[in-house]
Image (cartoon, rainbow, N blue to C red; front, side, top):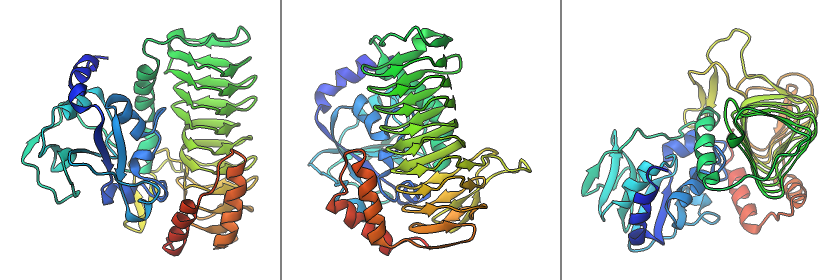
Length: 404
């Protein structure tokens, strides 16, 4: 890594520095429904979350400055000397090195947007730094949900190089076929890969700890499978695709990011999509990612309360946490689904579904909060997770302030 030694030389001054990943209101709202339940920096892109990328480059204590209703689960821990980093900024060694040189009162700023600031306190949009410097290389950030799958390939390659540098992969089983460069395949301890075809010509394949690729899977990288992720038998994967921790997938995937703990375990197509946590797509659920007219895709935008142009031709569903789809569900191009939804029945539901709704093309009704909690508890228990009191307070707030 080009900047590795330079960063290390500066870390003795910053080790255990207090880092705060801050949300701007604009980016947090533009990234809904994915950020209803998390700060922006808790989103996954590539292999890691944004926070994990920063932690790897700049060790220290990390917390979040985000929406007030999220602060119980994601508190902000201030000290007398903090470095504030924009939560939608994608970490690179170059920008990390530049951050290590910040003095109190100084900021890294570009186009009047503060990307990093050092000081005892900070208010996005209001704090005025004493000194400003410009980024040493072009800034890359996520601003809309489609940026997550759109920039997933670049981030996956960057994460792969960082995570595997100087390490040796577990051996690939002789029952598998590898096409491409073996150095672009990395298998972590405990992973199981049998009788699969793996192609690294277009990008790396990372198979995390205790993950499993079952027989007759066909994978074209880039692909990241985080710990305990599973590809069921016969799955076809086109990259850049990411399966977060404990995700189980089958059927056909093309450029999809699963944040974690979600399933699409059966046949059906899903492409150019982002799926939150604790979601389940039933057997033969299919989602369009291209309009029949090949026209530019429009996507629901929460702040403007309307569908906005994306500049994209390909865009599948954006699905918030704890949303489900029954068997044979069909989604039109660029469908946006809030949190806590239950979609089922024949036909295409509307392309924007508000949070805590159930039904389909035939109509939607509200999901009772008590029933949502019952389902969430059962779903999380399957992964040995508990719906905490803090979770209940968070979802109660979101239910009471739900989008209409």
